Length: 317
Ligand code: SER
Image 1 (cartoon, helix red, strand yellow):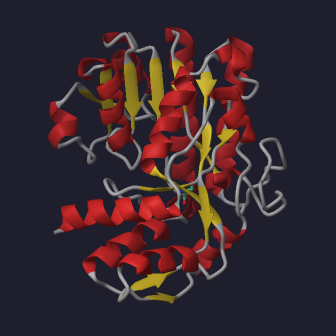
Image 2: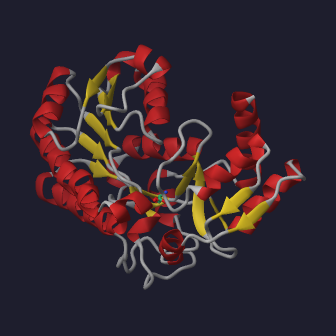
């Protein structure tokens, strides 16, 4: 039986991943790691163990790993791209100094580690359409620089010490549970909230800007499936391109309008977000993930829109 620590368990991915892992491996086997000010509440708090786990405090995390005999760490602590650009040193401290702490703890305690990378790990020199798995990665954001470093450092720990590190390059993640905070792709979540609340939406990303996106249920499956994958089949490790849909603002707007004909969107482009979005790929080629661990997403823009509108309407009613 696995014993899992989720660091960042109250965040955008962690809040749902922790509950999914508890469903699979048993409530007592999945520890929700959080930081002060982001304490778990409700079902997340009541269904299983929770501990303070600040990635910048390696000794405290080491104690939690030993206390619960942890063998797998999902390291989800990070600042998203726009926030990171405004707080670069904090982004590095959490993303890279924190990662060093986690990888050292993993080496000493024999843990596997999952640390997300991102479409943000690519830059303007990267091929834009069907971006290959192995290609140029020269990002222009501190977020992207920290993600490329995450991939390299994680691979180094695998090659040098045999630490079982694995990751995926997440696209923009869309969920009806915990909203993202300060990402370039957040508009694709915010637009659904506006539609359900009956408000007009001001889009900060320019018409025609394509980015890869993914519905959270597929993203959670990717985390679990990759960590369960047979290591013999893994030619890559950190991190796999994964993809399920790519769209530009006009396409998601028109998809929502099919269900909410009165919904209106206007553009008011945010310079920082647009410069980041323009430096990222239009779409990723995820053949390696499909071949090496059977990645196979289930949602597209149409089915995600139906589900998002239904779930958000029920929750916000
Ligand atoms: N969703 C992230 C961001 O926009 C990209 O991985 O920062």
